[in-house]
Image 1: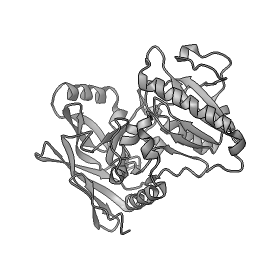
Image 2 (image 1 turned 90 degrees about the vertical axis):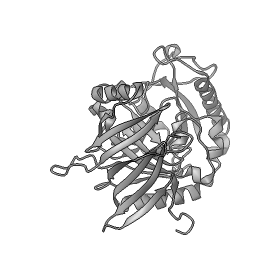
Image 3 (image 1 turned 135 degrees about the vertical axis):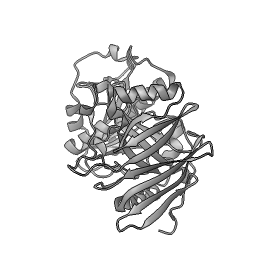
Image 4 (image 1 turned 90 degrees about the horizontal axis):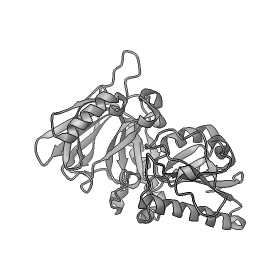
Length: 368
């Protein structure tokens, strides 16, 4: 929804380099982004908006900070890597100041930094990491309806003081996790990015909240339990206390690698998000890219949370390259060995609301 004061749209593209080599999906996405910028420029007479393609060296990790400089593409063939960037760079602050609307179909997610910078500069941004042509049907949904469902779930999360989840692995004994939702306000990512200072994913369709991380003196987080996550063929059981995954149950090679990662990078173990996606209820299937897949159903994220209002940011990680926000999505096609057998919210006043049973929402979307 362009505004009277909007002058230009920026399309952001990250480029491969030697540490992070190129691949076909990335090449296709860059070419698509260049086409978007070209077609937007050609439509300048109709839209009243200019368009720039902004190139920068990839940051190597999802939701890491953007680099200090970028380049406005002058046209012609795209550089094949960041090492081929030529000409004088500009700062991202200059880009943010000169463009009211940003589209970011990047390899690595820009959601965290653009959420923070949108509040500072007042632009609107659609973050689209890993976007592919296969996601276009999810852009054709009725986003008024998507937004309505997301707003309903946000309202429930706002009223909740606790989420209680029961997971089953291979149909066996359950694993329980309690998430402390006190002292928090939930967020709605319903796909309507109309207000200045907002940034969010497209495709979109989730309500989400950062579990309480224990930052209030004398009031520790009550998040605790066991969180199973299927990584490849192996299910890793994370031991959670005070909103941190502190270790894993003994297992195979993947469990051992995760245990080492938690020991090396404690901020990675922060439970950064409880997300409730709605798109699978509207007929959308998994794409293999978290941009879309996290919008399908219930998910829990590890790592950075400051861009959602939490306490864990880049300063809590060992280096900028180590900063992550990783979503673990609980739908059959992505974690077939793990099912959310039950999820419920305890609301203020003590009422308990069933949320999920056997992997499906039991919330009355139609009647609310």
